[in-house]
Amino acid sequence: MQQTQVPASTVRREHHIPGEAGLWLLLFGDMTVFAVLFCVYLNQRGKQLEVFAHSQGTLNRDLGALNTLLLLSSSLLVVLATRAVRGAARRSAPRLLVGAIAFGLGFVAVKVVEYHDKIAMGMTPDVNKFYMYYFVLTGLHLAHLFFGLVVLVVLFTLSRKAELSEGQFVLFEGGACFWHMVDLLWIVIFPLLYLVR
Amino acid sequence: MSSVVRTRATGVWLILVLATSLSWVLGTDHGLSNDGHRMASVAILVVALFKARLVGLYFMDLRNAPAVLRGLFEGYCVAVCAVTISLFLLA
Image (cartoon, rainbow over all chains, first blue to last red; front, side):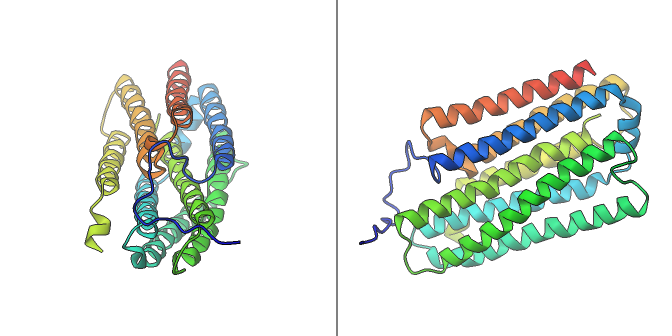
């Protein structure tokens, strides 16, 4: 079967579903699960305000903010890579994706430091509800991030191809959207756990 | 490479970084009263969902998506913003 090549920068972008429609069921499903967890967390916080306020004070806000900047920067590089594979500057796409993966790994490194500090100080999930939700929310997010890193490696492989078929480009866009969702979820988790009191 | 970087997405990224800095400042101890912290927290949640909306519209490219998909996403942002702020204030 002959593959349909993506016309470089002539693709009409209006009323365009990024990735595939089915992917959005997965993304909205994931986002809804996290939204429910946000509500459960806030509900539990309301029952133990003192415990949550004291425990939250032990988190490192600077590291949380640093991780936000790392994911935002990673997401930007994925946007630029997506545009690059679509247009004339496609040779820059692999480098942009390497940068995106590096920022993602930076997030993991910061998280490892945070987890190590917390556990070393005895702040484990069984200490109180705050730490339980802290580890559940950040752990679930980290699992998504690990999967997202695998997706970015796939996108990197795709970006090195001379040409992408329409199906491969849809896959590329969908993978990019998954990575942006990982960023989007952290954008809410960070203020909720670290800043709101 | 420079033409690749000069895009609207880069401008949005700059806004997102500035908004993150604003939230970080608002969320840092600065001698506010209890009411002051509550108002700062509401502002932090509004900024967070505003940032999430920017990521959806400009990074996921939902601003060019069919109205249903864009509407679902915008509805998600508004709903999460409203519910989280309500639960926070009711605590």
